[in-house]
Image 1: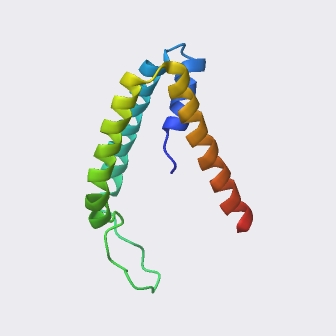
Image 2 (image 1 turned 90 degrees about the horizontal axis):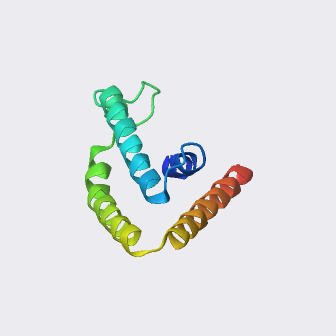
Length: 113
């Protein structure tokens, strides 16, 4: 998906009363737990027999995961640094802007279907 952070962070702030920084940390921990669960369920799964090329390949594209992992780690370091440096209002504004842009792009793709 587009990531649970866009849901978990506002819920942590609005419903649980956490500060934005604490809510962001809780979001990351929640996403990590969900990722481990998804890995446990899908690690041995294979693509279904539908007659198309690729039948029998693993459901998880491990090559893509190996390609994306360094970029994700760099993004995590950049995000943690930004969280330490930026004031809360700017951090929330930037996160809201990214979430709004992602929602708009997703809605546009849905409308084009």
